[in-house]
Figure 1 (spheres, one colour):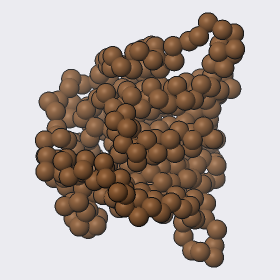
Figure 2 (cartoon, rainbow, N blue to C red):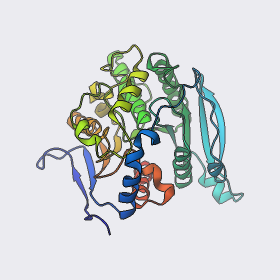
Figure 3 (cartoon, rainbow, N blue to C red):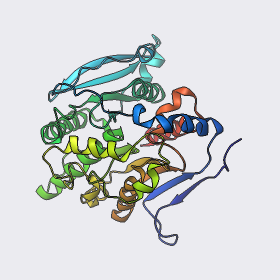
Length: 343
């Protein structure tokens, strides 16, 4: 038995004034997802928890065995940060080789509270993206993690990484998409908001990302939204204490209202002026959802284009469970891949 099925697309904002943001709203929930939530919720303090701090700098990663059956993974270093390129196992035919010509690059930043590296679920998602987008190079960015490498030390390196990959892509005639989930979504939004504001202040138009995709992003590290309190009992994964601890760890000695850690507080009009769409998704039972929706609404107010999936009664980063064949996770993953394909 499923909850009532309701699947529609609408525009944000006033019904009489067209919005730059298109929202797909879904309210259906399968029995399997209901059971999954019921199992996870009592365990949420143990399912998502802080791991021991990793050394300062960009962590060296190992792809999952399952991923390595489908993709080859190549490590390169850009501005002292490890980047892992995923390439589908290639056929020997010329037709397949021709199809592998890179036109776009996705640089993906995984979530994990700014403290944990990519998980098996992340590798599965990136492998799926690499397989479904043959003209796109999917790359995982292993950014330095808190608490040994908090934002004051790491963010300047990420900005240098961004400028360098944009310079190389511009020279090669390639387009770049920045994507990420949760804390990684926070990073890609912070990078683009900061970079375009920097360019605008200098009167420059340096090469910039073609688009942004943020899955269940953390957009405001002040953690002041009262709607989080009402949602905490329903959220199957996250606790307010956890998201406050991880935000504090990432901010270091920066104020949480700094736009480099709270992109919702930045000026979003440069995104509209440069024509950079911001796409994303939010789950209705995710305590980070209310702030992400406020960010989406701020994008609409600034005239930033984008497509967003808003799915009621879904947990934080639910598309990551697609490999377990959860219907909602598979559908959300497919929606995400379709948006990325059309960028």
